[in-house]
Length: 448
Image (cartoon, rainbow, N blue to C red; front, side, top):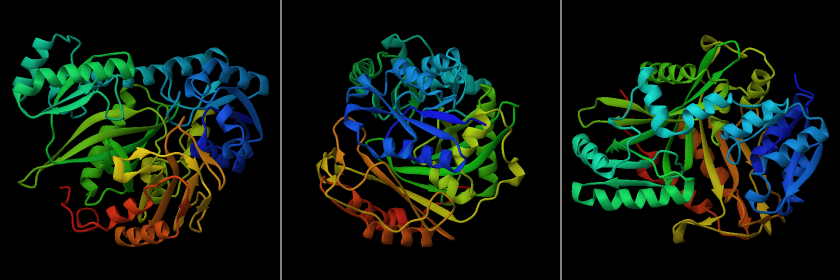
């Protein structure tokens, strides 16, 4: 096992990784920007190294500075967290070249799953169900239009290298295709430096359900059940829960086995998430389709930890150090229901525009730590800290666990009611509204 790791991230995920490392007697090194000189994650680690200016491109995305910090402090491995460099194959390779362990999948797996079109071609060969569509390399607009016509409207145009809803448009009729394609390509080149797109059938009644997978260096794989992440705003998740409401054991096994097939197809190592679109038809039948694979730990991993009673960061560290997976598939047990709410500094009444400012009051509900418990808070800020414009607007994650979904929902509402933030606008009241709506809290359709 490692004796010292560097955490190449900031905020709540850096604090989260540091907490598990501390429990495992592993020393930690933080990196920080000008804006984060007094940040919580800096205090949470044993050492800290300044790596540059406040903008991510001047600090957290400067992997050469991160590697220099790792070498200078004697770190043996680098945990990338999520976001920033977590899915950057060049960074993963640079770690290996520098004699450091990248606590994540091999560069080849990141590359294989990094582009939507190529990954879907690979998944098709592995027998993983795909949404009907075109994933080819020929980007001639006339060809793309013919493919869309053949698929049948409505279709979804998606940037191949994209994420977060950028470079994505739904097209309801053929007459609108050309304009939507041009718009997607402009946004894709500006956001990702790559204007390639894919065309898929637009699923009318979707659920966003993802499977947590894990692989080790001995070729073993497991799936740690599923998470439902269907509640989103601007194509970004707001509420996540596990298990998925209405999920049957038969469907869970089918999706889990498909996710393991996806992971094994790229010789995956470590924590990953295989995301599926689940379509419920009017006649009660359903289909699930591969959407993409996130080659990192997910923001919503705490709900999986809650229902499984496992520390996924500990699993990452053990697997990265060469140990086998801690448990076999038949040893994993699902217990209860967990829901995570992302508390963000934003204005829900103004298209969720991100907000900045000082946290004059930052009151959170009483909580447990990382073991399975009633309420858990993962946060990277403290009262008096400033929410800056340089980084993601998420302030904290509020996670609750109960014996049933109804109990978990009730506990989440109480926990949100005991969350008091004065300073920047937040979505706390919006979250309380959402979890009380009939469409979310009431009877829902059942996956068959």
